Length: 490
Ligand code: C2O
Ligand code: CU
Image (tube, rainbow, N blue to C red; front, side, top):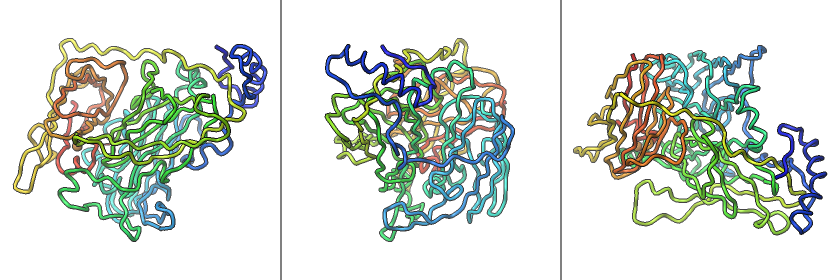
């Protein structure tokens, strides 16, 4: 396998590849085009997100200013819609930090109602978690300051935690990327994982005239089934095109920020490799045929466009949005469309570094003597229909307790007929087994989809960050109507 130095500047890499192209051609027979390891010009122009400005000059402090406010944006082509945004863009600005950095967020609420910001997946102190149990609501016109250190690398996100379904559904969400420490093992791997492409997947529900649909559209049934918007967006844009050069890898960091929609897709003709999920890189890369991302979840993918599907000049493939069938209906719906990928053949990038076989150790959690708690996502009938809840409580006030610095095993079940993504605040966990079967590989997660009738056992290593943490269904409509509970860590 031909390797080029990691982290080499594109021009240097291109020279190396040009020099090596002859060897590849000799080895493979037919003459290959000249190699170029840079992404095609404008490859990410249609999905480029703004990064948050760091207002603090010191190297290990990131100071970000966020303002939540109503904003007019063109989401459906040709129509303006008033949405709610952070700093005027949808998604909000991407916060970028490095492991160990201190992050300060100076926030102003210019919405007509109270809000908070929750840092989904980040292991922050309880007081910084941004829920109604850890802080007072930030009223219209008020400011608030969040301050925490980021301990883990990976792809995370931020969103409100008051009337979450309405506020996230109106456009309030943004990505938060934490890079590994310089000089760390993971940092050394990065050059082989491809060029970063961050994509926040979401949807929005618009009326005929382009205005945002009411947050409580279809009342109880809307909440019970979970509101999916008919306009599907990648980084706030419907059906964008991303360009890829033959032989040049990309690392897709995907966040599902929709309030109810699951995203399931493949890239026709291309093989996908899953690098990791909620907690960053898994133990090792795993080839997959397709991916499903439940609300709240993240997935990292590696794509290396292959020759056989790129006959000549540019070829555009449509990435289908497949039916994740979260209702377990007998037949799948016809696929929709998520985005386009344009494969650029000329100056193919022969000589990209090969993907490492392993990324690093994910420790095995010792669960001997661990306390076991049962968590059942359930529903019961009610004069108005069915109500959703956890462990028999449908008012959102169930409270479990746990002791700091212990490991617990939670047995998660779902006795409803539909899927629900379980999300725990503040702590990563590992899935031990699903119906007794251990998963293919170890990884850290903060969200796991619960399929009806299956039992998912997870191990949670609690540390000393005592306080009130929440766990709930990340179909935000469900969380709002009762699939919501607290964990008091003491
Ligand atoms: Cu992203 Cu309480 O959730
Ligand atoms: Cu749910």
